[in-house]
Amino acid sequence: MVSTTLDLSDPGLWARPELPAVIDDLRADDPVQRTETAEDGPVWSVLSYDLAAEVLRNAGAYSSEGGSLLGTGEGRTPAGAGRMMALADPPRHRQLRTPANPFFTPGGVRNAARSITELAGEIMDKAVAQGETDLVDAVSALPLAVMCDLLDVPEGDREMVVRVCDAAFLGRTADERRAGHQQLIPYLLHQVMRRRAEPGDDLISTMATYRPGGRLMPVEDVVLNLDNIVVGGVQTVRHTAAIGLLTLAQHPELWRQLQSGEAAMDLAIDELLRWTSVGLHTLRTATRDIELGGHLVSRGDRVVVWTWAANHDPAAFERPHEILLDRSPNKHLALGLGAHYCIGAPLAKAELGALFSAALERVAVIEPIGPPQYNRSLINFGLDHFPARLIAR
Image (cartoon, rainbow, N blue to C red; front, side, top):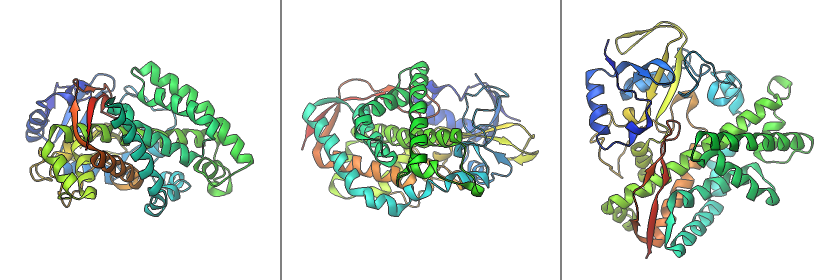
């Protein structure tokens, strides 16, 4: 058994310039390694694409109910296990997704495409007019606004909800983010109770009045799943858009390919999702003794799929450490795989396409005016700040 003393759960590791070589060397030694983590003790780390896909597809052998992310603590089960989409296995997982599915289908997203495009344009117009801006803050405005539309947040509440979501998702410290959630959850609870009495056609109403097995879903479960949806809906787009724009600024030839139409936007979005892999990992717990990559994983062992490592595996992707905007096929794992494939994938791609297109239409050059600051998160790895000057076309 190959073990490493390198703590892959250290967020600082993933911002290091030598990261690709470090991961390649580890994977070459053994694609499944026993590693120590600071908070969660020993885990099995999966670094290859094929074995990562094997774990993500097999919900029967690798359960989400013991936690889907590191950070809960060794031997601890997270609150909401079996009650939230991210922390439930089939068939319960499918049951929890059912009421939210219609809001994230490709057809539903197409109906909202015009408003998403217009809002992205307004955001980029404002950023260009400012000249110097923090692009992390700028791009965050789109997924927050779209989420308010899905939830049908009253106009009078939107400024407050955006402020609370900013704290919950963009807070600089864990305490700031926790305080934001502590404000967001009571607000969601109030809205769930109100719309259970007077439902509309929005996401909160649909979740609040959902009756699996003929009985209303418990209010606590509705709130937990709404909070889960908001987290996923905001964070993936925010971080992928910000790191994507940084990447394009650092590689002017890619910017020119997109601006000229030489590279297709849909393929480029998938490649930037693969390249950034902002959801660095997915946690599972073995439900039985099982062989994985030549190792015996025991029942109860924690198994971590390192998404970035899988998405940069040369056995699965040609020239994985290069950005190929026309890469096809591109079966990256940035949005998951199997039962837990991201419910909001069509919406996330629509938002990313709108933001990148708006920037390309309005901006000739993105000039960084200071070093980008990476966050300290393993959940949604990305940028806290990206100060830049936008030179208008």
